[in-house]
Length: 219
Image 1 (spheres, rainbow, N blue to C red):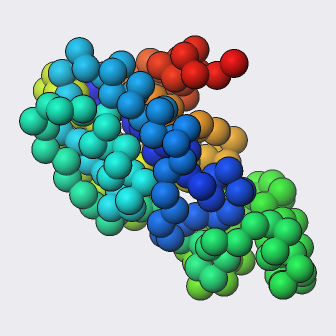
Image 2: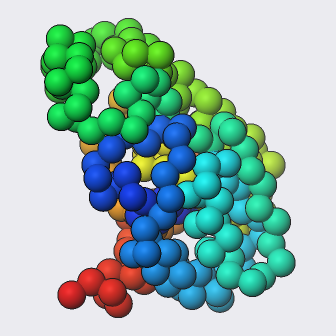
């Protein structure tokens, strides 16, 4: 099977550098341009099914990605972004001003090398009312694993539309890396990542490609 991973187009909160998580933020005009060009790029790709996070930004991206084609879009809460709890909608500066001690602990923890205590590190969250790395990655990867199990012996082209955080967990899992490895990847808005998958083996063919829009609408 072929698995295409697409991050949603640019949102207003992306521009403002606000934490999104499960909260909705509308696409910018630039974000809509990005996903329109993504749809043009995928016109000749024989996508059979689209799986998408239910967030408005991903639903809009999924619809644009298939343009006017009659392809089912399956909305699944398992593909949502990591929950950032009470910090959603805030910038780093705002959190630092409101909860300086908690924010400093979070930043320090994020820079630590988990070492031999990776399992404990992944299961520990310092985000108030949010998810840990382990909770979010398990939720997302367990669902993607069900898709792969059903399709890995086929030639189907599957499109999964998600978020920067959630899709990085998928990349790490397919490459047989720990969930914490996701922090070493970056996915741009409206980027395209492509895996080919067969039983016991996933091959990364393309990663974080934005040529469909960056070669067109960037100066």
